[in-house]
Amino acid sequence: MPVTILLEGKLSRACEIACFSSLSFGEYNVYNRHMAERRSPEMLLELKSTPAMPDRPDLTEDEALASARAVTTLLGRWGLTDEEARQVLGGLAPRTWSRWKAGKIGRIDRDLATRLSLLLGIHKALRIMFVRDTERAHAWIRRANTVFGGQSALDVMMGGQMMDLYGVRRYLDAERGGW
Image 1 (cartoon, rainbow, N blue to C red):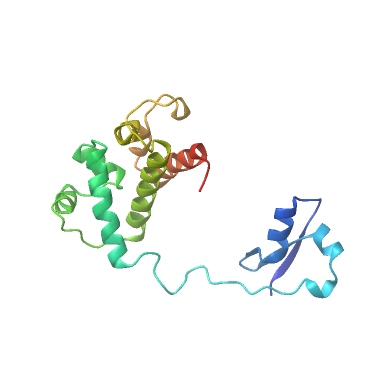
Image 2: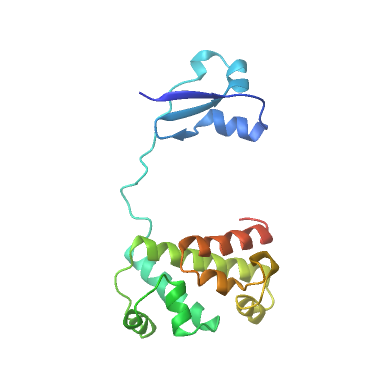
């Protein structure tokens, strides 16, 4: 049976709308008490939860292959060595990376698809930030950055963890102003 949670205190109008409209976490439905007081009880209707795992894959096989080809090219433009590229991609085997460079991309699992997405998002953010200077956008990856404790974005991404890529992506999205 779902549990209804009423939030205490006043929230911004946008948050009130979000909380009241359909914010649902598994078996928990969240409502704002301030909104509930202004609405009749029948307006606090049960909201249906959507499944956490939709029936369709996040990426089709064709999309994943296109992403892999794009990232292979991108990593070359960033000037990454084979070892650096394999590490950024989550420790790809040398033979697999050689196949990728030859255009023979095999199966892409969820972890690798997420890494590809993050790398393409990093590229997108850099292209937006350095719209007239592609070389500067590609070189930024290797430049030291005080936000990363004096390390370059590449140094951070070489940590090998998914969150390392996510951290660089999040920083760039914040710098360029979000979406």
